[in-house]
Every structure is written in C-alpha cells, then in structure tokens.
Length: 315
Image 1 (spheres, rainbow, N blue to C red):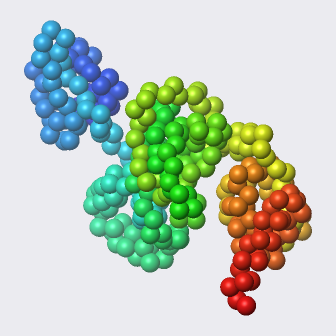
Image 2: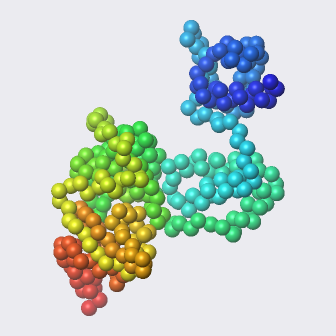
Image 3: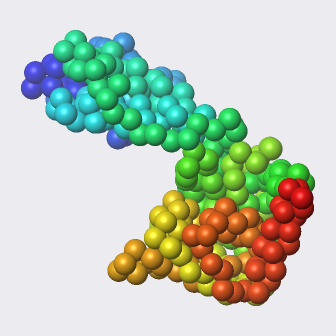
C-alpha cells in the first residue's frame, strides 16, 4: 500500500475508532510501530486533532472536532455545496454560524481559479432570498442540542410585552420567512407549543434535573399530530381564495389545516388552542379579503373587536 493511500485510510480509521494505541494501528496496517508513529505525526500536522494519554490505559485519542477524510466533488457538486451554504448569509442567526463561515472559506480557497471565477460570476446571478430580520436568536445551538439529546431547558420567554419562565423540551428548530421557531413540549402548559427563538431572552439547561420526556418519536415532520391535545381547543373553519391559499402555504404551522381544491381555492379546518385566539385573529386580519372565518364564533368576535380598535384610530 502506498504511503498516501495508507494516510487516507488511517485518517478514516482514527475518525472511526476515536481511541487507539500505536501498536493496534501498526498491526492493523501491517507496519512497524515506528512507521505508524511517523504516520500519526503527519496526520497531526495535516490538522487531525490527536492527543496522547500516558499510563497503562493510555494511547491516542481524537478530539471531539474530528476531521473528515477528503471527499472528491465534481465541479457542479462543489458549486452546489458552496451556494447551499452561501444562501444562509441572509439569516442574522444560525445554529452553526461560525462553522458555516469557516466551511465556506475552505470551500472557496481550495477550489481552482477557474471555478472560483465561475462562482464569482454566479454570485450576482442566483440567490435564495429570505427576509432580513433584525432580531437575533442567540440560543439556536443550545435548542438544537436539547432536541437531539432529549434535554430540558429553562428559558425566559417574552411574548406580547410579558416575560415568563418556562421549562421546555425542544423537538427541533426551523426557519420560516426569516425567523427561527422552536416547537417544544412546555412543562408549564403540559402541551406542545411553538416558540419564536428571537423572543427567548435567556436559556440554560434545567438546573433542577427535570426528567425529560421520551420524544424521540416526535420530530419536525410529524409535529402537527401532537399539537393541540389540550382540552381547551376550538374547531377552526375558514374559506380561502386562491391568493389566500398561497398566503397560507407560506405559514408552515398551518400545514395540517390547509386543504386545496382543484380550482386553487381552499379552506382551513382543524383544532386550534383557545389560548391562541388572539394570534389567529391578527393572522386572519392580515389576510384581508382573501379569507373568511366561519367558526369558531369566539375567533370571529375577537376579530371584530380588533377591527373596531383599528377603525377608531381613523375616525
């Protein structure tokens, strides 16, 4: 086996093993311990984060930030990967902001000059437009970690000018219309809720050791079926014009309620939490003539009050 091929396979091996001794690797690759030690030193010089431990159970270990082995991309694949990361620049907050910028720099700097020239030309020809928001969401990485590792967070949440402390267990995070949202189980409400990430004033892993729920079966793809389980819910029905359907398609949280006819019109139907009536009233007022709420009556009454308040400002 050539040295270059051995180093490539060695890089993949140490990433997989994470902890190992020089003798183990020397036997596996059929080389002397002295040769393997030199190979490991070369890997370290290439950026593979290795450190050694002394003692009877010592050896080498790979740090948490592992280095992936080289991957051969075609020109089109490299350009596609570059712009996939480049499109994220519109977001003021990302769960992996520094890593995205670093990956983009590495991609760009290690490309050949002609491909860099092509990318420079394409930057002004293609874009993935997302509304630029001023609101920061500094806890995205923590929310994502809690969702993946099934952890409970203690957050301070600001809504409609009021702040409250909540214990939540996130199931994921997603971006919509330039804003980040976190569906989570709220231990105070004993139900699932969607939190706007920019309204989370502070967040920390729960210091009281609250027992997390087993939510491994709940994810962003099926979350709607677990929402609105509370008894205090109302049945929504609203007719939509073609334009109304298009406007509601942009609201991801309406996905399970939206139904579309062949002519492009549609309707919204399904349970909504009574505690969210104020939110829905403002949403439907924003749709204007493109939506007609049929029920619940409480929502219609709330909308009429809001219309009255709006009209009073223009008398």
